[in-house]
Length: 127
Image 1: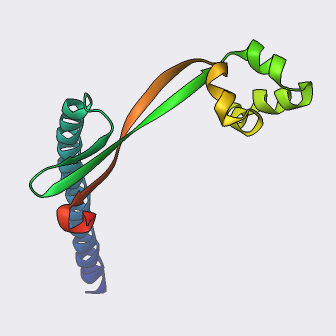
Image 2 (image 1 turned 180 degrees about the vertical axis):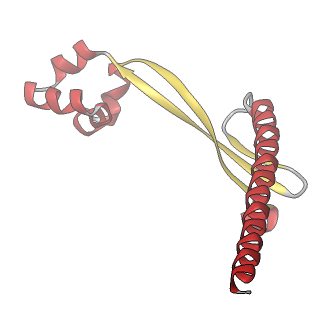
């Protein structure tokens, strides 16, 4: 009799486990569908400039990341060798060594890395 109970318990555990595996599979399938839909909508929004956009119920905020490329020779000529080595390791440090009013003269180019959908809030949350 104990053996029959053990088998019954094992079968019950297997059924519960099988149900959990199936639930997880269904959840992931729904998640993939939602992520695909989200990607399509984001692709449609990709042409928007950075800013705030309002729907009837939600507010969307888009930012843009820009990478500045500095003219290395101009930076080298302006900084001491020690400062240049610090800057060469972390290019964002250029701003720490060159006054903001002169920085534009050192920029060789800039690249838009990507746009970010930063926030999507209901209008009630956004206020």
